[in-house]
Length: 74
Image (tube, rainbow, N blue to C red; front, side):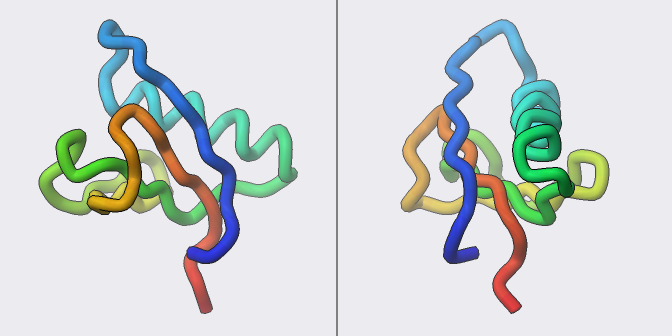
């Protein structure tokens, strides 16, 4: 992913699924389509998972509590 939307959610009362779902909902409203990919810090997730149809992947370059959403590079 080269271009995307950065989202911050540091609410400790929400699960990772809830945080990703909220970010995906906002992305869809703002850009008129669903993101395909969400990158999170490695401390938040050990291995790739799906939230709905969005692939959530751990990356060391993403700061904790930030979510980078967008489309997969083609």
